[in-house]
Image (cartoon, rainbow, N blue to C red; front, side, top):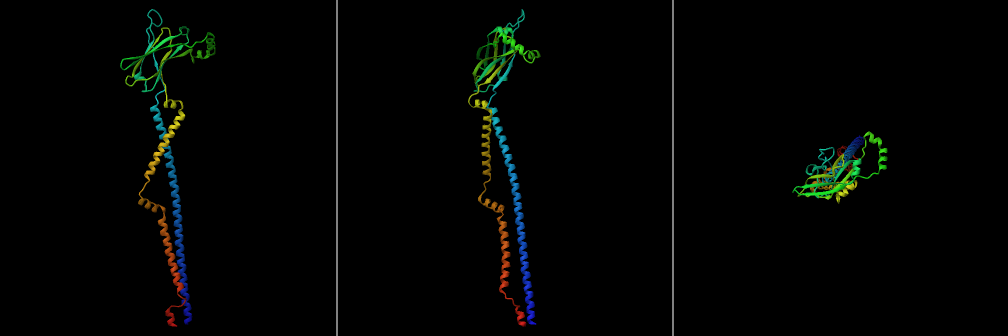
Length: 335
């Protein structure tokens, strides 16, 4: 009877130990599975967050690039329209004269006045070429006129004048060439699309500078001929560019690309330097931020939890191996 009881008690003890060991193994497996699931979930969340941050950073970089390009173009355009004056200014003038009382015709020299302060803008330090453009018909009277004189007087603020007189001449055309042109362009002449006319350009001043201390107020124009027939007239002021302005006007695409690219480099350097300067933190704050964002703290806690569970299981297994497979002392006493 004693031996049977011993075997029965030993069997129960072994079954209990096996159940406990199996339970510890199941619990450990569950914890490991939970930890693996947690790590996988954290990794997935980290990947999602990284993708979102990449998208945000891409959008931010694209918008920053567009802003820099727009500012570069705006700055170059502002510089160009501030630094560059108008290259050509046209101002029509109406010629006045005294008609003859005894019959048809002109009894005085045709003349006109133009206000320079109100209609014309002359940049300080910029040389100009001032001319008079005449649109005249190719009539027999104009062809027979030949050369004629025209003068321009520019009145200054102190009451002085700057005068210049130049001659004008219609382009010569032979009688045969006139007949041939009339025959070829007859449909245009008949329909009114074109006219038999010429452009006569008289240049009065070249390299004219407007003195800021004694600027020009108005100009007086006089054609010293009573027989010139004129359709219309206008004053042409052409800016004679030199240096950088000459380069900007002769090579607009090259200069615009160089200016925009230079502004782009400058603005990019300013934005990058400001961004790098704003991301500096003290050493203590950097360590705290790195510790919070790196995820090492959570991993260390998880590893310590796992090691404590494994230590408990190992201790229980060692204690069980040290105890012999014999019944307790009470059973020994009973035997």
